[in-house]
Length: 421
Image (tube, rainbow, N blue to C red; front, side, top):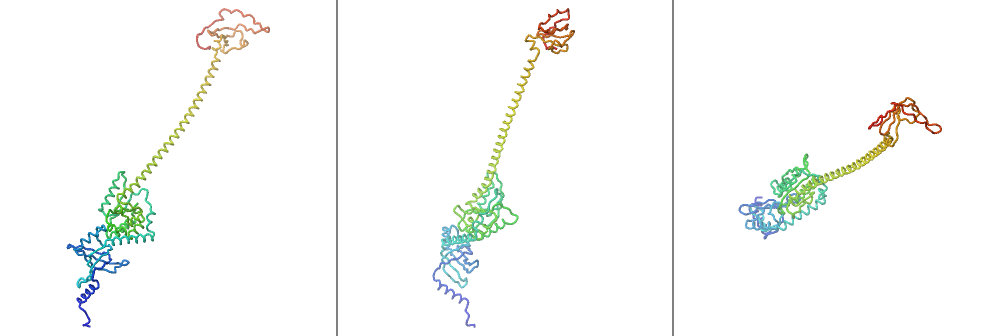
């Protein structure tokens, strides 16, 4: 038994020889960066891994020596717009080494940035296909904003410039409209960003919270800075949110899976502020229009009622004037009738009027007897007389001669004015 064992150093040396014999030159390897550390001496140490359905199935250490790091780092940035970071899938060229003390390691001398870009796009396409199959792509589009959305839950980093632009534009608006804005802080880039944003969504949906909309704000960045917004779990959480979700992520050219599943997306945080301002302005204009229409309708009704009132007043006035005119006409006729019956008018025509002792007009000689007093009215005066006798017209039609007046029984009284009494 004792002669069958090996010294560890011998085993390690044997492994080193086998590795060097099996990998005499560099090989291209695909893996995911699970850790990255840049040292003061310029060397970069990277932990590489591969997972299958969430389980790590392989892991190895790698080194980019200072003599190659600056070139690799700058070139990768120039192509992808972002530095190498944890969570990226990379294709690299490396020499396989085995050290008796430090074990298996890889010395990286080249990284292909185009592969990393393509890998991100491939995962993005897979995410979109999965969301479409699960019916999540258009789920948010079925939600509608209230007519006056002013209670807004915002997911962003607290010191983000985009958040500052959004709040200034929305809260200091020229119209004086008031909004309630509550910030739910979250990481907005890196491998933990998706989980942080999902946690913020959970907080917004907590019982007792009532918001009209959820706003996810993130200013510009590189494709890898914004890669978290293509994450399936984040996109699914946005799609299932019971509140309308609005996104303003990245630059004008950017369009992420989070934008696709959101209720509405815009290009910038300022544009998102304008969207909510426009909602309130539109409602304000609608109310103003209703006010104007109501005022015009009320004025029209008043005008119509005034016109009808004028017509009624004119009709009543016309009828009243007609009645008054008719009344005056009747008065005129009555006055004329009265005037024609005035004894003075008869006297003016050359006739005389005889009144009995009671002042009643006499129409027959038989109405008086001898000794009765009578008055004879002339235009220029009145004669008071005593009846001595009455003579009737004879059958032969000849009136007897009138006897002479006696002494003082006949007198004339002249009155210049006034009707006979």
